[in-house]
Length: 234
Image (cartoon, rainbow, N blue to C red):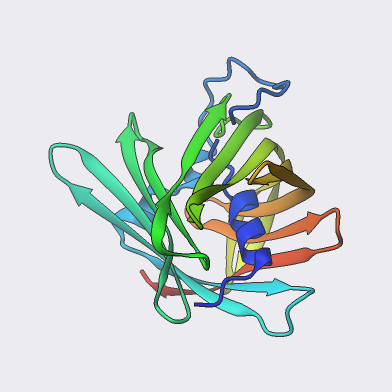
């Protein structure tokens, strides 16, 4: 499986789920949840949709393709599933959600890296309401990788803000979309050493569709573009 640094950075910056590091929030007590249908459209899960995304970096000559599949399991509790596979059919990320009052909440999430052959559990946390219109929420995404008998720690922390509403067209259909922006820091720790990379993430996510595109920029000049190419199944 080919998984380079730019994919690791992208996944961390894309995971705006949640933060252990508190930030100043613009809407601390907001009960507005309008953005649920933009960030995690329930119809994606109930209809079992599959999306094809491209991933392109200014440091890699060839873009990579990833499939993101959604599904729903209805039992005593409704569970929602999101699974991402690379072009070799290898699962790179998996998330299980619980549906609480119509809002998806992360129960478990996993990611995969080159240095380890199994999916690794991740920790997500949040400060504030990520579904609030024009709100800001703190978010954190982290995991540890076993390496030579020790652990490598990677943590993405920062905050994300809903900036504006826009109209976008995909496959001839016009969607109501929201522009989101993040300021984040990747901290990697191993054997007493700590390295940090700061970056920004700007994304467009649409009602009853989900993410349309995003751009990640790091302070060391890396630019990563993530773009929806095709809805494979509906």
